[in-house]
Length: 214
Image (cartoon, rainbow, N blue to C red; front, side, top):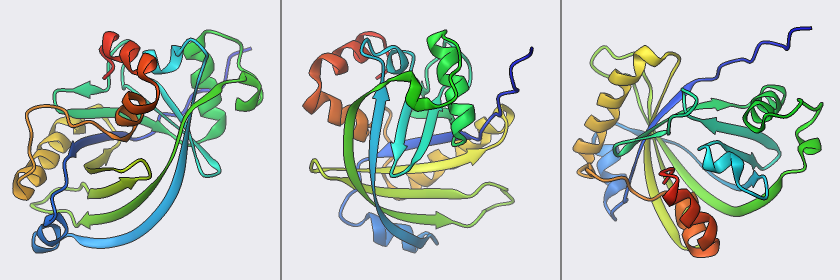
């Protein structure tokens, strides 16, 4: 019997930046609008030998919902220069199948049956700004300003696209917003997860560096 078709989620094209004290004023000046402010807890899961994260596959539970992020092509990395590209899944059945494929094991009926272990958990306060499509673009550009409960702040400029063919133009839009904000960096900016691991799970962090995931 053939296994069910695995749905493909959107591709998240993102670039992180260090938010300065005037970043919100700059966003509003450039035409962005504050959409909401939310607080949520992310808990991340992996096998004891870190097989998922060493493959750049990130499984998390955000409050009560499962989410999975992984590179668009198997065997590649989501980090591309100073930007990242990840496919996103939010359907638990699709996530269970994708994680089972990554671990090369039979697919169970539930993620809970995989007996994965939590390796990180933290709370984030997020202020989300949104730019309307500009210059004929069909893409919505979102800017998240995050503050985590371990005294760390980061900004993220993000565009979601449906196909790999749209990634190049999305990257250009993300970079243009970063330029206009004055936060464009040639080097990757550490995110919440890598910073949390560096502080709290040094061995795991070192493994990911050696595997060129971070």
